[in-house]
Image 1 (cartoon, rainbow, N blue to C red):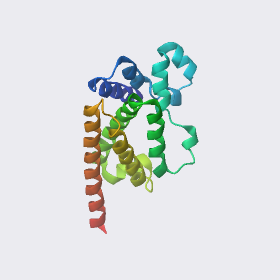
Image 2: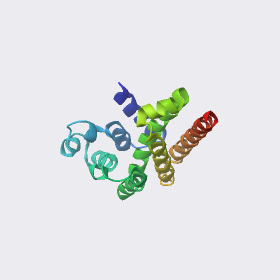
Image 3: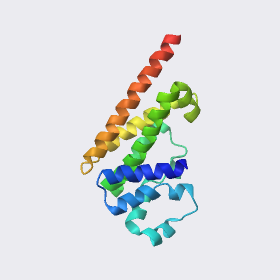
Length: 173
């Protein structure tokens, strides 16, 4: 169910941003290559070359495996830039959906929930990665200003929650 909710959320974000049919369809399918046995060829046959091109632009690159998290945001953005603004919008919608879940989790469970999601030692770096990626993507969406603004709003919301969490953490010590 969470997988379905996420893809519908990404589709909804793109639809509200007035994305075209191919981009909304790619929003539904954006995780299909990395999460299933569907191949790019099968995707192309069923949904066309444009949807496939967009999905492949945001599919996790296995070559990123050994690269530091701090360096991955620029690589993800560069991969989207190669395909164009619609790929950036697709990645931004995916990130916005993930950030919305993250904000909700952090509000509900604080640092403990973030540590549960990403690991005690890793959650700060993961949140910083999301913020860096979101800021970079928001600057690449001239045709999707509402999406860019929603992404920046969610980032600011997450930053404020993290500041509160860190202040609480310092007060304990």
